[in-house]
Length: 238
Figure 1: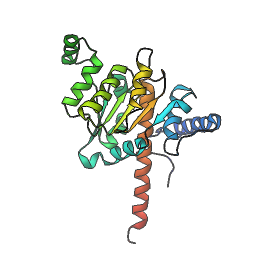
Figure 2: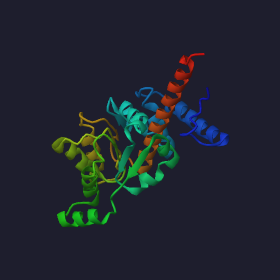
Figure 3: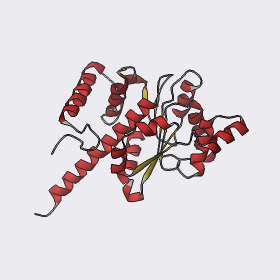
Figure 4: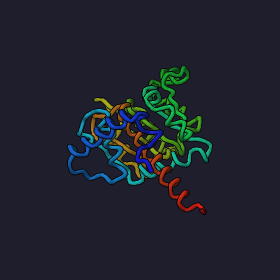
């Protein structure tokens, strides 16, 4: 059986070689780390996206994060599809459409919607806060993935919704970057026990890292699909 994920990896042999060689270099240069065998491919792809080895250490995982994300993707089609709610359009654009389609996943962002802008002005809040509230009203938060790479206020609001309103995303990827409330918002997320999360400690982050983490989860899910398919074929009657 091929070791290449045909959906979630580069589509040409040359591209696959470059990507695999890059991962090998990261493995070699990263040195010792405390991540599990399931967590490391996510961290490695985040390092690959930024050529920044600081994410070997800054990246944090809720104990159930990888399992929750992988299972949501694997079960998406059987459950009528799954959703990723992002704080900004950059995340939606950065994700591979064929990879999402393979699992039956749709992306959403509401940051520029007129009603979101008007409500933010009326309440003197931010568009990011109102976008999270809109996603909740539309039923796109509970049981789904929320991916935040730009707006700390979106993550702070999501944590409030989890604590005060019982919101229950399947997984939160919280990696907002910046100097005002970015580190604090992620610290709040890392205190959450009720919902699985992946986060970055400190100021670093960004939409690119969120996209990298999601692509890594998609790759882990495809590898699990291939493994299950291989076992089914071996167990099939001759």
